[in-house]
Length: 194
Image (tube, rainbow, N blue to C red; front, side, top):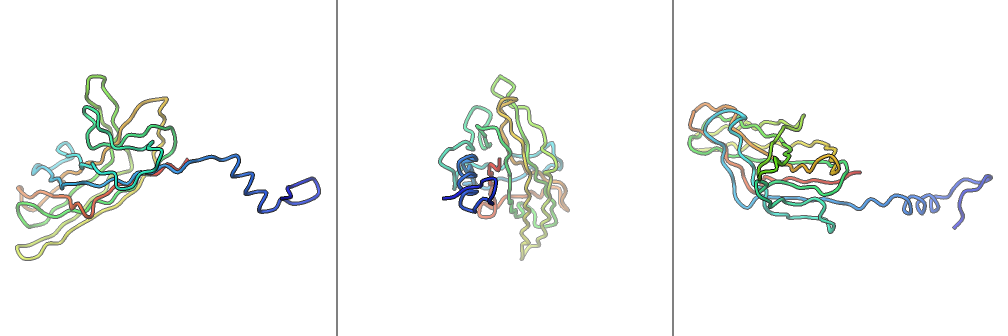
């Protein structure tokens, strides 16, 4: 293999060898799904959001720096053990529960910081809000879905955050209508990109 000198241009082979030797980013990823659906509250509003229960790691890198959290107060959340920039991508599909009619549900990603007493204080990651519109009648359901992604800078030196996806009923034509996730259309994928 010949490399660059003052009088020649580096070869593709020498550039690849240099890059391979200097940049050692190991791919880290997690794809999680749910073993059971979850229904929203019948009460409108983000304050009534419920956690989408991601509890199955369907694809996971060998390093396991991205993982499903199991700690007290952290069930069905995502933990990250390494500083870096991560892409969160999700798809959520819903159907209508209770009364078949018009329904709008909201989805957002939140990060949580331990309060030191077994609980977590959660805040929104913006922009991560997205919405699903469902329409159904007594004979035919119209399923809805949404997908979104966001880049998150995670620094384990600053704080030990966990992440979760939540869903809530934004509005509905009938007050008792709820949205229910479809397990075959709901997943979250997290990939470390730097």
